[in-house]
Amino acid sequence: MKFFRQTALVSCFLLGTPVLAENQYLQQQLEPILIGESHTIEEQQIHSPEMTIATYKANGFEQVWADIKYAKQVLNLIAQSELEGLSPNDYHFDTLLALIDEVDKRGTDAAEAQFDVLMTDAIMTYAKHLIRGKVNPKQLASTWNYEQFDVSPDAAAASLLKHVKSKSLDKGLNNLKPVLPHYQRLKKALVFYRELDAKGELPAISLQSKALKPGQTDPAVPLLKQKLHRLNYYTGNLSDASEYDDELVDAVKKFQYAHQVDDDGIIGGATLKLLNKDYSEYVNDILVNLERIRWVDNTLTERFLIVNIAGYKLYLFEDNKLKWQTNVVVGRNYTKTPIFKGQMSYIVMNPTWTVPRSISGGIIKKMKENPNYLNEKDFVVVDSRRNPVDSESIDWANASRKNFPYWFVQQPSENNSLGQIKFMFPNKYSIYLHDTPAKSLFQQDQRAFSHGCVRVDDPFTLAEKILGTSDNWSRSDIDDTIAAKETKKVSLSKPLDVLLMYWTVSGNDQEGLHFYSDVYNRDAELLKKLTTPLTNNSI
Image 1 (cartoon, one colour):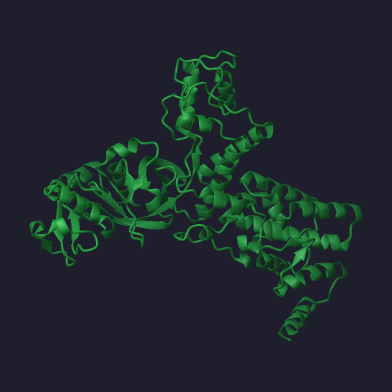
Image 2 (cartoon, one colour):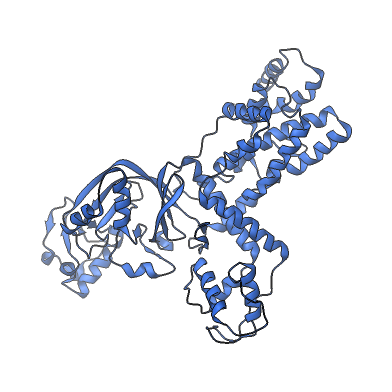
């Protein structure tokens, strides 16, 4: 009974003003959407019903795309969604082409109405994907706490009608696309690798020995030249010579550097595997990372830090421009650094470190092996109220993580596991950025070594750049405070956004493109969702 009452009310609302004959077909398409029914047109699901209805309500339930010539131009904009790493058929593209062809040939009112509603839904859905992504990231990461950009149906409707009237929808859609330079670089790379994929793969390289070293010869060298030439790493002569010469070695080193393997010029198993990587795999890598940028771009402030977990990099951005970067160490695969957003509110110089219960067993084991370990590493033992405990009174031989009632606290020193400075953005995961005495780890290509926190290669320059802008700290101020070896908390006058992201491809026009190992195995699930035809659950 409720359904029939609702339907009657809707019909009265739609028909409350004189109905022009040419609008009857349009109203037939809109009424099921308005009453909340799942509705399809030509077997195409309406993906953005609220925005679609808001548009027609704002337009007096008249056609939005009466100008068929301009509608055809807008169809080209939908086709160009492929350049963003999205699928035109998520926006009814093939169906819209068939309908516009029918309108051209027969001019039927039914086809015009179907085209009109599908076109409106297509643009609204495409715009929504540009501004916040197609896939809901909360379905992929339980730690995700970024706020998705809120899209108001009424505001979206007003904006669409304005752009249709002024024939400026191209500008409107461009304004929704991410502005981060990484995104623009990835878009260019997508075109490049798609073109290579269309040409077809070269044969896989197979070496005569386990590794090819500079100066050696191998029948696979001519093929190696061709592969690196296609990928724009080698610009030399594509001769049949089989010597692995200096020019080709330099090209291999550039390739290795861009793929995060040791850039020694020696082609071993890891480098050979990457050289034989299919172009379609590169395309897929780029697709998932374009989507990851769309998730966050519209939440960015003027100044922010991005930690790229997969790339082991920290980036400082100002006005959407990369100002500074450094290497980082992140969590192991079984102690993954979570993906989330926080606000850095203070910095601690000469910090203490309270060892988490989960890893205190390692300290106990060290004490059993070396009774002087606590003194050597500047540890003290405290109870739950932070009162000192005499370590010599503890029965270390029978101690274990499960029965140990105390806490280990490492005092400020160069031995401190947090180093001499830490950057705090309070969060429920107890994750922060910090210095480390283990500097050699930053020389490794793969840097997933921590228990979850992020170790920074050049923390004092980072502190200088953060504090120098708004808090008037100089590098000498920082150095003097560190030298004093007293713990000091420095509150930021303006909190700084910190985004922990997971990008397996990144880069810009200055430094080129970098491909990183999918260390946490997250790309495949996102790719599957991204390339699955759109359903209402995808938005």
